[in-house]
Length: 406
Image (cartoon, rainbow, N blue to C red):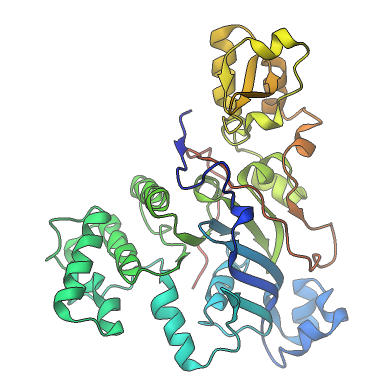
């Protein structure tokens, strides 16, 4: 399996070393009567969703969620319909008002912003790309893309010039004068993406933008996001119900269930060290060799000779790539980083990872933030895993899911 390097992430510049753009702590969104009492009452926060509805008539769509989104990171929030993921992303810019907790962007308290500051946040700093495009049918592609710039007050010539450059960037050059009704679904989604990019936001917020697209068009749009991130390094928060999409796009993934984050980690951590049976069931059909890297399989070299011979592979190489290298050489492969041998892998090491029988793989993969069985998750913010240096190709589809209503 080939992979696409994430050239925006240098070896010495990991996501963990960058400042947070969004910082979320103890966030709640409760729907129902007297919603504010729920986060403040430990007895109520400990109830299951069904028990909470029965006792109070309330639903906790987002329950005690904490995380940081670092500069330049693709942070994916994933879950089934009703998990709270779309509510969560709307809370980030207060399109939905949170019930409790804190949200900050670049250190500024979002919940304390007045209407003027909120408009500035939504127009300039965090742009949303929606599932159903939201295009203006009477406007051309160019004028749809320029709409956000028009709202900002830019002159017609300047905004059309900037919009034309963005239209070309997303592969729609030559279609500037068409209207949305004359475009395919994938082309309309590219217009929506271009409109968000045109205002040059610090953060792009994607709310299941590709879920309505055909599989081939969806794959093309995923590749477009990967390409744009590689070229620009823009911070992205991506909402999806598709595990395949999450593994392909995310530097880190927050997996949600019933309003809570049940695990937060890199794709490798999610697949290699599931936090509980729910996560384990989610990733059961994922080919481990296409997601896990050789770091999960390598061992110390048995001798100086073993450390000095055999094919060299990168620490970020997948197990699948390492299997190919070992098979071709007929000998163990060396895991090399800047001329230094970190360890070696042989066929037995690699096959144990594929089979899921490697007892050490879970501890060798960097620790993902977990939630224990039963009761609410810890309030401490999960640690940030190192950004993977590769983008992964799609894997076997996950369990069937349905789209989450807006």
